[in-house]
Image 1 (cartoon, rainbow, N blue to C red):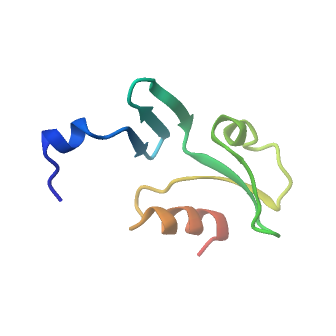
Image 2: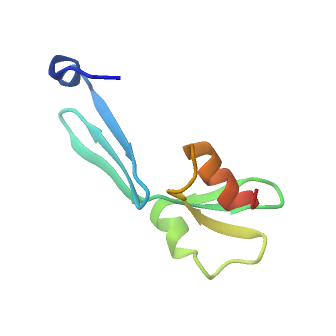
Length: 89
C-alpha cells in the first residue's frame, strides 16, 4: 500500500513496533512511548505481567513459569512472533 504525503500529514499518531523498541508518536506531543519490545508472561495462566522496561528488568529474575519474551524478527507475523516466544510453538 502506498501512502501519499497528504495522507501522512493527516495522521494524529504513529506506532513503530520495532524488533528492539516500540515507539508511539503523537502529533503535537512528539514521542510519548519509547520502550523495549519485551513482555513478561505467566505461562501457567497466560496473564501479562509487565511490558517494556519493567519486563526487561525481570529478565533472569523470575520463576520458571514467568517468561520474558522479545519479538522474533524471523517470524512471519507479529502475533506469531510473540506466541512462539511465549508458548514455544
